[in-house]
Image (cartoon, rainbow, N blue to C red; front, side):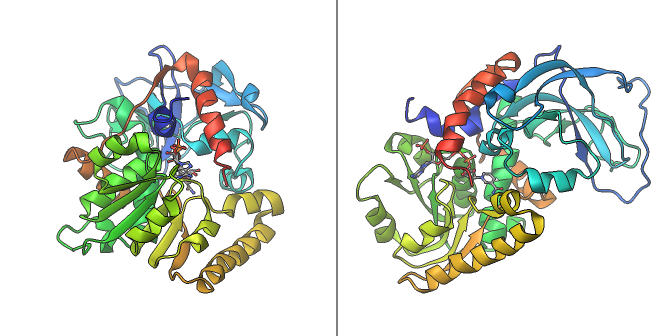
Length: 379
Ligand SMILES: NC(=O)c1ccc[n+]([C@@H]2O[C@H](COP(=O)([O-])OP(=O)(O)OC[C@H]3O[C@@H](n4cnc5c(N)ncnc54)[C@H](OP(=O)(O)O)[C@@H]3O)[C@@H](O)[C@H]2O)c1
């Protein structure tokens, strides 16, 4: 496969819901009000019998498990704090592919509480229109509003690739990496030209991270395949290190030290100990957290996670380089969404769309991402 196309795929692979095909999700909104379901006069109603179409699995396994159905019960708004969204476009992230194989099932089942595990509708990143809301949902979003709160500058397809990867990059840089105080919301506070190295910058999370770091006036160093170099420079990378180059590690060391190293390439925590220059924070999105819980259960898995994190950091202490190893995550905070929205409104945030698939071609889109997710040994 074309080397330039591959890295852009998770961010860019879009599934468009055909107008006849309704896919719905329920979103939780924060409120202190009482919970009830609201019928909205003059707006489309969703009786319990109404069906939607979607792609779902009935057990964990490989791509053969993903089946189309046009007979899926529309999820009900159970709490007044929830809204229902008609999905217009969605994008595929590595976790969507990994979850088909059962990744993260232990923790997600605990979070689902009473809800059944199967059939499971796959996918999580989308843009859509609010069609129904609980009476206790906050004033916004209203019926007819678009979610994610989409700036005019972005089309549906672009917007559907921003939230999951964007919030992951935002949390890695601000919450774990300390790029700026107050999560970047207070303008004027200086990031002191921080030096940020983004590993795997040409993927979904990486392209978001480059643009966020640039917006914070950081010096942005990235690793990527050489043919993604132009695209990354346009997004704001100051220096591109080709990871296919045999001197690639040398390239990382000679450009150091770094305030933040953000691992979006699936290297994991151990890679930090191969870095021979100083850094403050090494943040990896490929931690063993969910895998440990899947393998050992919630309690033993949590204990193992604590041990792994201590081991990751003690390994670093014995190396020449100094810094803290942290595990980064997608964190769905309002502050992060506000940040991304403002950036997009100022036309400083782009989503690189590589290929658009029709809703009926979802399997083809998943097939294309399948090799990548497992090729990178999703952790
Ligand atoms: N923990 C969480 O909450 C969370 C959330 C989101 C994502 N993630 C993880 O974060 C990582 C990035 O996610 P994503 O959505 O950006 O995935 P993605 O779009 O598949 O991007 C991965 C990128 O890594 C690059 N890459 C692979 N091997 C590399 C290497 N040796 N050196 C430099 N770059 C390399 C790929 O480039 P090529 O195509 O050229 O190989 C690609 O651009 C994934 O591992 C994902 O599983 C974790």
